[in-house]
Amino acid sequence: MKLILTADVANLGGPGDLVDVKDGYGRNFLLPRGLAIVATRGAMKQVETIRRTQEGKRIRDLDHAREVAGEIQGLGKVTVAAKSAGEGGKLFGSISPADIVAAVKSAGGPNLDKRLVEISGHIKSTGSHSVHVRLHPDVRVELPLAVQGI
Image 1 (tube, helix red, strand yellow):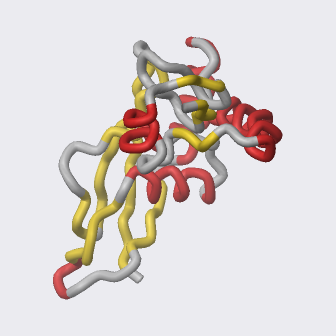
Image 2 (tube, helix red, strand yellow):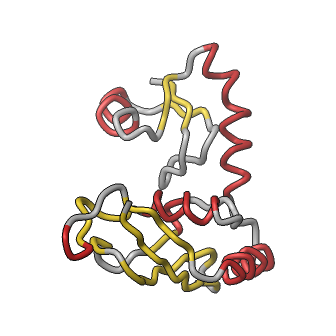
């Protein structure tokens, strides 16, 4: 089965790569998780778009990681709006890495990959929290969050 990867897959390839995998692996693992799309003529035209979007999120080297870390630290406390909160500031659900990445982007920060955000435990209440962003094996930034209920 020929597939085009949309994300990094260990021991297989990166976004935009055309790979040939066994039918079961592609049908039962890669396609349902959104890690790949079927290689058709129309999809082949989208390969360059996939590569460009992933390139914008990728950290190139240690110097670039330090530069992005400086941008994140310059933001200060980032506010994340929770969809709904109950009594006592408890959230119905939790804050995900995708919510944090969207809040950083809306605060004027860099476009990050949600897999770089490390949350210790679940964020299920309003108030101040702290998460870490792992930009490079040598660069890790602490990001203060203010979770507010709507």
